[in-house]
Image (cartoon, rainbow over all chains, first blue to last red; front, side, top):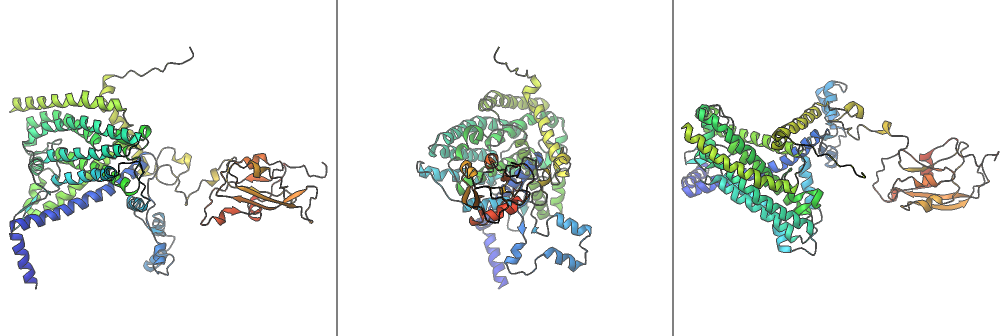
Length: 421
Length: 188
């Protein structure tokens, strides 16, 4: 029986199309799970970090209460006491005190990690309220259009290098295509249709203004964002995301060229335009993801709730998740382009790959996630530091500052590359 | 001049570039974050908080000792020093109550009451705690100084019926008060 299954598996994987389908599907599921998990995690990071920055704890209570045990038929009223008794620890010892401090006598602590899940559950169960005056078809389509694009654009982001199996090479990237950044810009640009449609179809003035602002902001920042990547692409010489990260693994990260070819004079002079690119690009990612200080579309002081004023229940949750998914993808993009993506650095990638392909992939995946979390923290950190800009300041920054800077930056990079080679 | 023109600050080029100011701001928030996590936030002692940041984790640690004298909690009825019901059922509090939380059923003075001078006494006195807005107007309007706002703030109910407090409960919560009203003293 096992032989038959093994043979079937062999035959299946030897077929090129099936091999491609199965591996892609597996990577797809992994990527999807990672992004959704990170959406939840980034909500938690947002609320905890916000709390700490404002000298308060943030959500820390949503644990799993132990009285549920009684509900399920356990007769023990205080499980902690029994556990301590079982190990022979006196109730006055510091271990018991620590356990009490961690509230182990009342609940299984999750440090508030359950909070986003519970909030999601609450939104799922809430009443769905669609006003009678909306354009129903567009009103329903808008949340999907916001949530969809970030998930689709994640396809080109590499989360580890590749492995060579006996059936063929697996590149740890859902779609290893030669138009990486362009794909992301194109798809994430679509998400503004969701905001605009939501604003317009709500048939109410504040959402409408929010939708208009989102459109105008996206157009102005998309230009600077696209132009700010060009110096990088000139250096990398490729648009394939997997190759971009491989280049950084071999020759030093864009912003930290400490090994390989990164130690040449050219790369160190190139750091100047790269730094300018980085600042402009990160700012544009903030604007793209509609995060403070650029969340003009849902600016609650001017616009009540912005484009999602009329939404409730799961439709609102979709907007919420879409916003955080955009933030996760934005962070992943910045990490991939500027901070070395999955590469561990200092030649550790090549060494690990020489030991074992799978070990290298695992370590790189973990490193990628760590970098992602770090950048999401940066997103949150900036949000709770900066106040929101005024609308005209945002537009002026986009068109009169960033556009010119990025164009000048391209020529600067070209000049450096021409004269140092 | 009837108005004061606000002087706008002159920004230097460094301010206008914004990056330095941004880093300064990030440093401030990072300091707050680190101190919160380490449990050493500024003003923590003044606020007497034991949790992360300056907060008191509520059910474990309470603010009760810091409640000011003028704190407005749940309204209660009080008895005088001699154990007499101060309320004479004039119904002023019932009429003044903006939330219409109070309902009084006037009745005769009990035969064994220590003071027989007053005309009425409440047969029933009900306050609906779901309606009460803790404004304190009942206390202000009461000519007999019979109703006072207590410092009770934790009013948690599982049933609407439990929200209505009757005369017995209100007197139990209110207790006795000394002094103030001397209208019914024998010297008057």
